[in-house]
Image (tube, one colour):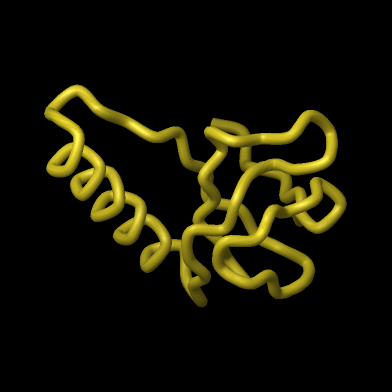
Length: 80
């Protein structure tokens, strides 16, 4: 399960952030991230931004819930 995470309200080592949305593909998560940032700018001004992160989770989490770091699936990115 791929999740878009709001990382603005991390809680130390207990949370990597709050789930904004869940997706089956990275493309869908990326599109939601772009729409989310556009909505933030529209509501709060052109220079507004909320830090987000797209992660793969090992277990399903409900939207609005905090994600403990142990549920993030760490993947090795290819070297460029």
